Length: 284
Image (tube, rainbow, N blue to C red; front, side, top):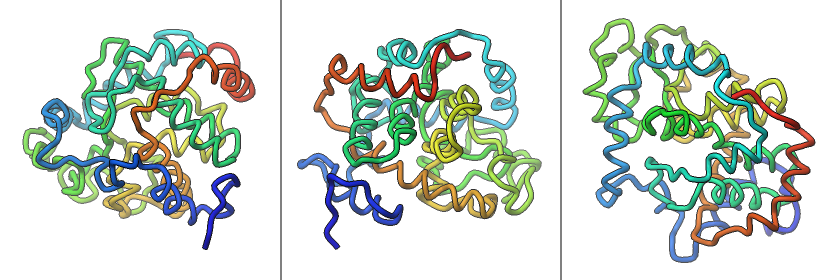
């Protein structure tokens, strides 16, 4: 089937194959994205060693208690993007661009395919929770792939060998298949490692559509949406909504390139879009 890239795709099932075909850089095949093999930058590997050592069930509960009350700052969305702009994600092997440039790359790719305005805005804001780093949090507690805590760590998580240093791996409460959970309990009842996904979800959960909220909350949950490593915890609604997470993922992943977007030229369109869904100042 031939797909006209100037029109929105009619079915979610078409999206990922089409995006993989169109968006990787000419000199970088799709399989080279998220490559955590022997040539991974040393800083990325060191990041995951810290992340896997310290992301315990108790640590996540402490961070939720610290940040979910959303009392640290008041900012509008564009202000938050500018605030974040100094950060480069140490966990990401694919780009050295600033965060605002990555957000605009993602959103512009979604916009070019004619998708709904809420979907475009989701692309723009999906990483804004990384402002946690600018509140003094270490990157290993903010970025990187997410995974459930409170149950056994899957060997399909990137660098699983580093979980040997995590105390929960030796805690009988947390190191079984289900741990503190029940079969197919649903992800809303599962605690994932702490980071920018969950934080931004808490900031915008009263304002964005449910499809957007699943994307925001689970876009870094690669062991779930890519590896299907936690299907035993997901329910039918999760599986249905994860079609949106998987539809978003290629835009987030394969649109990364060294081509810098024109931030000033794009700003008026995105400020109007922000005002439609997330006007004024938000509690962070």
